[in-house]
Length: 482
Image (cartoon, rainbow, N blue to C red; front, side, top):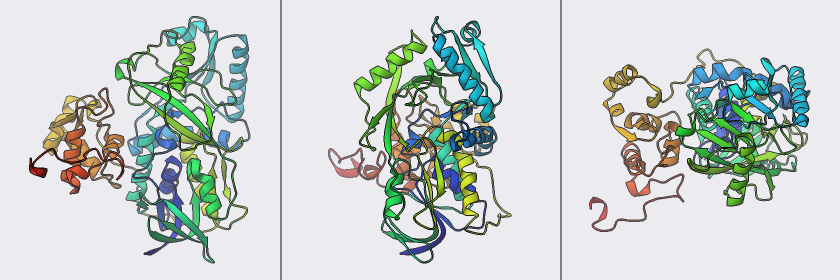
């Protein structure tokens, strides 16, 4: 089957989803292709979730420009799209005199980059704000505009808003071939053919593969792996801001922070690896994360962790690559989008839309909708709001996930969203069923029952995150009715 499009976006991470949303405001025929069974399964689903203030990036780079611009966009975007976001601010801690010099240099760089609301704190001010930091702290750079966001929920929100505005999403559609044509490109993905005028490369750690497949640049990609420890919500108040150590050439270092959902997160490590798909955690890596984090908070507990995970970042040079290929007409590259890519995503999307406008006529839709009706966060609602939901739909009275206070009504809404995904992890990313202390030990069978009922998929065919991850291998006796 051959389909014709103005623009095809390859990659369903936060960059691809944000670009899709931005292009959805124009009268364009846009498709997004994602290799995996869901959005945000790469770098966008396994990172720190920090909305960086922008003092770290080198002045004059795209990283600096788009970080600061993206940071300014997040508060309003998160309100409109109902994305969990907490503007808690960040501290870069100084542990010795050399670190004090570093935070002053970061402050000056932030001023050059146009970062507002920064100041240098004394040791006493830091301890008053963060009682659990080391007693030997000498000061900190406080950036008030930093915050924390749910990275996978941001990706999904951008994508769902794009879908509501007419963008078509094709999950489980890995790109297998790209042919340059007189009119643009012929893209083979998921057994279908997509003909387009422009092809936008948003493939993250695999951006170099898509580029070369299309005849473009051979980016020298380095995979940088980061391991994390996520704590129970009982530890969410252990720190009150994003706590950074002074940055190094390998990144912003191991942080200790609240998450947007109220947990505590520690990490990441930073190790360059050969296998860009290696997201396995290791005992040595996690031990190193905890030991390094204890430089920030010496009494940081070893107990209380509910899960660990690892993410992969694509490092290509010293700056983002956002430009048309010099080798292939119509191939728009976004590559090397490591930190602060999540922060910069909405600003990157606007820049990409401007580049699209150099090739195609952009006419704004009169009907473009810039808001999204998200899934109600039942655990954050008061009793009156909960009762109002229950009166409209009794399914909101049936609790499914006790750890995260997720109801059947929320799960059903997730399964009937603009981009429905009928997997256990798909539900988890959309409404947090299974994200809590027991990590789905209690609620998984009930979630599977609801997925089966709402989708028509047989119970035994419901998977964790795709066809190769089924939990049920068969029935013990009597068949399905036993």
